[in-house]
Image 1 (tube, rainbow, N blue to C red):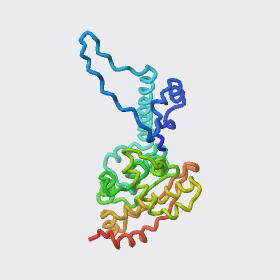
Image 2 (cartoon, rainbow, N blue to C red):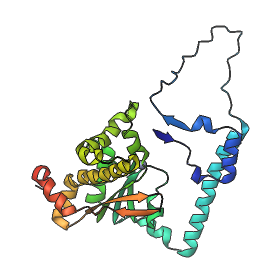
Image 3 (cartoon, rainbow, N blue to C red):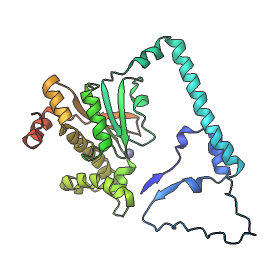
Image 4 (cartoon, rainbow, N blue to C red):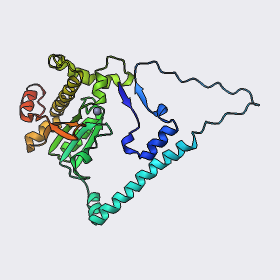
Amino acid sequence: MLPLRIPTTSITRSSRTLLRSIALQPTIKRTICSCPRPQPTTPTPNTNPSRPVSKMTQPPQEVIDYLKQSHDKIFDNNRKWAESKQTQDPGYFARLSEGQTPEYLWIGCSDSRIPAEQITGLEPGETFVHRNIANLVVNTDLNVMSVINYAVRHLGVKHIVVCGHYGCGGVKAAMTPKDLGLLNPWLRNIRDVYRLHEDELDAIEDETAKNNRLVELNVVEQCRNIIKTAAVQQSYAANGFPIVHGWVFDFSTGLLKDLHIDFESILAKIQKIYNLTE
Ligand SMILES: [Zn+2]
């Protein structure tokens, strides 16, 4: 199951209390499942001119106030951040405006609990970021392929990091033997990772340990997919970079684990079939 919910860690305690009190959660806390969903009904045309056209139902005032309040908080935070940066370093925004030369390309999961800059201490301008469900690098995904191409060929990043995380909802969903609709083709990439490492994963009896290992293997396979690209192979042959890294974030400790991807060994094996340097 892949729970989708409001990121309660990013809202205030009073907002959470309000959410509960106005019983908003049942409408926004949904779970993707295979249960049949109610189909939208086509409204009956109003053929009676004497019958007034019904107006769209307004949400409760508390909901309107809450939504407005959440935006206000973000703009307040933004103003404080900008003032703080400007005070600490008067030339900060002038330098940001000049352009970017990030050392890192970060490919992570969209999970709201893993903000790349916050967990690494990197500042704006130091990492180029792409995130999607379960940090996948899919050959036919024009989005991620454009990001890699631009980061390597134009920004000249020195490191590409694929960062997964234990407890990944995307990986858990892929392990759920159900039809997940639009997510099926995306999650199949993770199911393919399982198939590639079936013997190792089947030997792990504990479900959490099995999921954790699949998270790690998924990161390794996405690193392989990056190394298969022409941009990475050609830049490495010409410049000696970028290097590809596979990391996993652990919620229980807040720490990153380096899977110690053997970049050169993987590259050498890959280039027997996927050599794109000429
Ligand atoms: Zn995830």
